[in-house]
Image 1 (cartoon, helix red, strand yellow):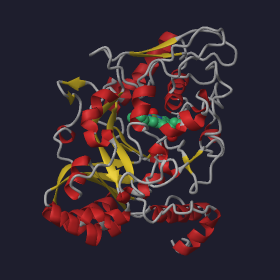
Image 2 (cartoon, protein in one colour):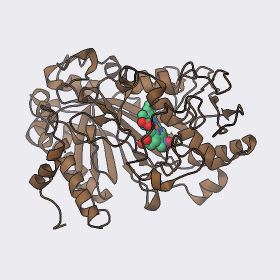
Image 3 (cartoon, protein in one colour):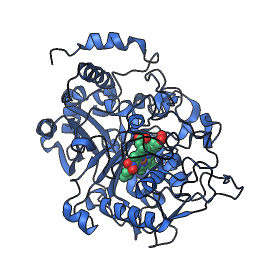
Length: 490
Ligand code: N7H
């Protein structure tokens, strides 16, 4: 640990990447643009029971504890420095971020209009539009805690160990005392051993993120977007202005949370049986659904077989834009990473794709698949992804991706096969939802069988059910540090 750079040394090294003039990294919470370093992340959803006491704790203690983007940047450089000296993982320090739902904001700033209709309506009200099965008015598969309407806010508490995160959580709850009551409490964790960094279906996650102008040194293939796509008060903000909807929304962001259960044994069985009926390798089939091999290597660059060295190399693993693949010979149009970031399938990207981008910051939850589950092909214990993303417009970014791209069988529009026949792209096979047929959630996707390099076989994936199921969600505003010390706590 003595080899760690000091904060000033780190900032001096980062001097080659000057922050955009005015991009105030001390004000922006650390999870928003760079992501808190996390092996464990405890999500503490709470109701504000005593507004006066909550405000007092926020003002005098909690707001100053919040981990800022500057701190995340310093920790990242320290981790890289230690790793470059050949040391194994160092355990990152604890991190603390927090956000408020519409009801929480109304308790802190009565009458505040944050100018985002989806945020104001709340995630449960939007679930039907996102394609979640609905029972009466309510999303059918959601846990009661997310349906009761009592969640005012969430603490995101990260640590290198579960104990570290728990100690921090206990301290936060001790300070707040009767000012809050916990509505739901769950901890996500990075998967063990060689699965570290992989989500529960087995794919390397966290590869492709938008770069942020003035903050990111872009990797090959990474587009730099204006910070206002993700943080209020900067170029790129919705509405073409840099003035936040409310002055104290400056340096704040909207966070979408969705608790997504993944049916892993069922998904694996589906891959095996579908591959057998299509006469192909199940590993290649999985890669066709995702657009990447489990190693992270993209089909756009490695269409025929995995290339683990490429998958783990940030200089290579995102360096493509689909412009050379307009007949989907390399990667199906419907693959998860192509549906959610079609790159040059839409032109110009500046106006058609960039405004839809999100910063993803989720973490897996739940245990590893047990031998029993593997053998029976049936999930017995819930596992999945605590999906988190940041943006400045929930409707134009997260919801648009889910509704207009992933759930839309026509998207990407107007594409043809090399033989000239039209492409019926189908749904995103990972997160797409088909709510149009009532109980029948079956979906299709074009071209599971590869035509690389020159084939002309037409094939269609038949997906009988969902393998990703939303079981809860909430929309939050994640304020700046000074907003929490001032406007939200007076
Ligand atoms: Fe996805 N997965 O592991 O299967 N996602 N995702 N996602 N996702 C991505 O590039 C996954 C979900 C996006 O720029 C990868 O980091 C799972 C939702 C976007 O190339 C993998 C779930 C939404 C990208 C997964 C899930 C998105 C992306 C490739 C749910 C938004 C970047 C690794 C349980 C509505 C695309 C990487 C790009 C990538 C998985 C959910 C969006 C492996 C399991 C709900 C924008």
